[in-house]
Structure formats: structure tokens, C-alpha cells
Length: 237
Image (tube, rainbow, N blue to C red):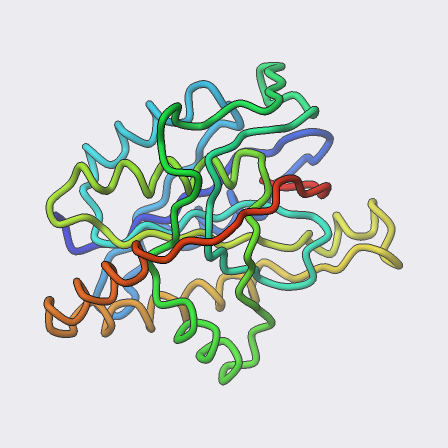
């Protein structure tokens, strides 16, 4: 495992000309944060190829931390996702025209997987640094949820498994103007970048705790289960 942080984003989708997650990834690429190199990868908005692309990236990079990011126009702030469900369900085509309704992401896989980042500590640090953000209990059923669920499965093939999570991003101010500023919250890419920097500053010292403590916390998280409400009608990825 390499001691660096992998941050992923997506290319623009639907009628959006830009995607803040791509801008964020490119802005953080090559940075050193808390002594860790940030490696950025931008994923095509393609459902069918997502798993293979993630598998190749993880095999190449072998990161210590994985943070996925994606646009969710309509979200009021940075949304730190707690859970991904084993479902892909969308009527908006992806970048190659694929529409998927009611498909499992991993046939025979668990109904849900929980993110392994220190969510409460990140949220507290955001509050302290005046970064608007919250812990979300639904990542939707589009590519962002698929990315998180898939990545959480793939990391178990690595030893030791990287910690993994996902952050949904609000619309950019320019996108909010197009969508209707009276109903669309927005955030500058600079504030989004600060949120990622703060999150990494929290994750790195947490990783450096005694391995037994982190392993125990991960096992406790993995043992949790909950009923998962399905379906979220908002622009997500």
C-alpha cells in the first residue's frame, strides 16, 4: 500500500458543461496534505465500466485512503455519505446512453456497505473550520452510490484494505444560476477544496492511531446493519 490519498471525481454529465468534482480533483492533484500525496482520477460517467475502471486504478495506485466525490445539484452543503446500497436505479442515461432500473450493483452482494472514514470527526472539523457540511444517510441510486458501494467491495481485496468514503458536492454558483438560484443551493469550488483538505487533515492522524484500535472500529462499523430506503429523486453524481 502506498501512503497517499486517492480522490476521484466524474466528468460532466447531462446538460452540465462542468462538474465540480472534476474541478476539485484537478485542483488537488499532486498536493501534499498532512504529509500525504493526493492522487486524482476523473472517471467517465459510465455505469457499466465503473467497476473495471476502479479495479484498475486501485491496482495501479494502491492508495491508503480513497475519497470519491460527485455532483448532487440540490444538496445544500458537502454531504459525507455514510452508506451505499446494492442498487443502481436511474432513468437518466449515463454518458453512453445506458439506463438501469432496479439492478443490483453486485449480484449476491450485501444489501449495503458502510463507509470506513471517521465521519463524525470530519463533520466536527468542518464545523470548526466553518465549512458547511453534514453526514448523509443516502447516497442515492446513481453513479455516486455505485462508486462508493463498488469501491468498498474492492478494497477488501487489498491488504491492508484502504479506508474509503464519498462526499457529494453542491452545485457551483454558475450552475445554480442556470438551475434557478431560488431553489438551488451552491458552493464555490474553493470552499469544496477546503472541505477536502480538512477531511484529509482529519483522516491522516486517525490512520496513524494504533492499528488494533482502527481495526476494532472498522469491525464494529461493518457489523452494523439497517433498513435502507430506496430511491432519491435528485441530480446525483
